[in-house]
Length: 132
Length: 330
Ligand code: SF4
Ligand code: SF4
Ligand code: SF4
Image 1 (cartoon, chains in turn red, green):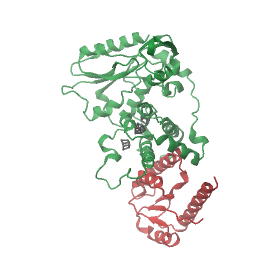
Image 2 (image 1 turned 180 degrees about the horizontal axis):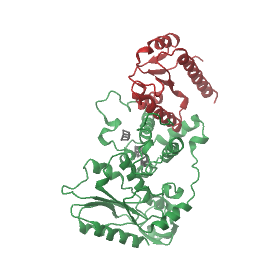
Image 3 (image 1 turned 60 degrees about the vertical axis):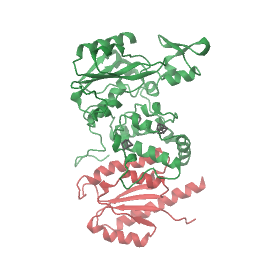
Image 4 (image 1 turned 30 degrees about the horizontal axis):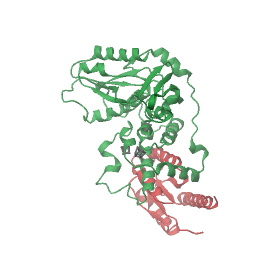
């Protein structure tokens, strides 16, 4: 069953990220890319709304904590993202639907690998849902 | 003993009262088991205050309004005295550490408490209207409809938080008055079992849980009572759900139950770092929705992930708002 997935990717707008974004666009045309200023600026309420409205997955792509252009930005957000995952869990959504990826802006291979893993996880969630 | 404590509160207030002060406490209503918040604006009102087993309302919420000057009389120029059970005192502490209200303005009076009864539970046990309640040792002697008399153990009517004892600890704070016997109180709570909380989230699969959440929240009428009564939900007119100008309309789904779930998801996501587990949201809910299944989950999470217990001190910054480079992340 190849149902169409609804996945949003929120990358931070570091200059060097263009390359990896192009690559993602080519390989996963189903992913909607919505650039944001910094992963620390990501409003987690939006993630909750999107998932509650039926999105299959949310990915936030930012620089490693400590490497962030805005210093603490991605570090604080890492804590908030943990909370989002637990909010999803507390209300009966699969916490795997929300994922943060931390990579240097120029990194391509690592991002693609993790994204691949994420897609597999989503597929297995769906599989489980069908079986139950 | 309750009568003695009430007397002590009154005499304490009399002795520290200065003109221009204000106090928030409880008083009687026409319903036997209901106590209502009471604003004392001058000295001769002090004698009307009441403290007994039914003072379930947490007054900490009013401090968030106090901050916005909504409840202050015009000639207020002194201190605001607030009477608190130890669990409410923790909500006040959290407001201090979130800088929602200035410590200099507030005078905290913590009252020794040995369990507070929920009037609605008693009414349920009595299956209807109760016309008179007497307290005898650890039992209520209630008169119901048609003069039937029944004796009910107070323990059966306790608020949820009183029975597990996790909320009873006193905050680390130098500046409160304690009415009652503090050593005796500390001894009592140290004996309380601090068992692990069992939650539905641990045992149920996401799908089952989703069904349960759907069922429970489907009766929510989104009256906002849980939000307004919550001392941790202090954004008032800046709440995300009431912004006419922002681009994101959160509750715009055609499916009402989806909106309900999102409402509670966002609300708990916001208050998780400063929810003291006071249980006011559940108590205030007119539809009796068991919101404790959510806030207990977040209370436990904050402790397990960040070793942070909201309301413990007046100065510890919550971990989701502060970060120093080099600090451990989680
Ligand atoms: S108090 Fe109850 S009915 Fe009202 S919004 Fe909260 S959960 Fe819904
Ligand atoms: S969410 Fe409920 S339990 Fe937590 S602080 Fe607010 S009213 Fe109290
Ligand atoms: S729901 Fe969120 S935004 Fe609204 S008052 Fe509560 S904490 Fe503030």
